[in-house]
Image (cartoon, rainbow, N blue to C red):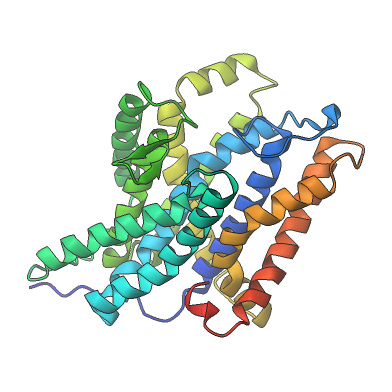
Length: 349
């Protein structure tokens, strides 16, 4: 049986720092939905000039990768946790940490709207479901060698093949399920089918990445190319208003464009943070500790701030968006710190 060298159980500072970045990006993404074409949102500004056109590029770029990257990083830590904790302990911890926030939002939704909705905690719902599915596979296949040979590193060919497969599945799914169209799968799993292939793939890749140390072994030649490709693709999206022909072709082929952007930007950022931001400090560690709770609380903070400052003219929608985003980020991190100071809350948040 081959010996597989697995990643160290020590804390990965670069992944902590990357998760903080993604969390802040989620806050700003939701802060902008009221001021651009970002889908349904419970608040609409009373000042018409607060509409921000460039957010029409900000939203699709974010949606192309950031939740997929969350699934990738979250799944990366699951095999080690399961190996160390054992099945029963792992499932119990997952049920508490993911299930309790979902239950709180569900109760609030029923109380306020009369509808059973998980809102932004759909991510936690999916993560719990995928984690339980992995546990079942793990238990069924425990007698087999989980790790693969160490020469199975992530390379450009594998990225292209993964992008091709993802784009093909995404194309067929979106024939009947457009972006931002949500439904309940199986009567309980709140899902946007248009992005479901990406989420499932990225979760699976997180498991594979851990077993093969993809993050730690990602070479400079691969990481730099992925970063360059992702940077160019993001730039082209933002240039759509300037070059309509370019913009029309990107949007018509978004199913494959998004797939390649997701994989290249996700692994490119992991490489960048590993080589440039693989360090910590008391403040960085503090931010990382609050990040999960911020994901849970930020939506309530944003909506409260938007209503509180409705009608307050800041000159432009961009300024208002940035103001709400910055304030929501600061307030959310501070609020989570206070909540986590309550005995027992760190088990949940």
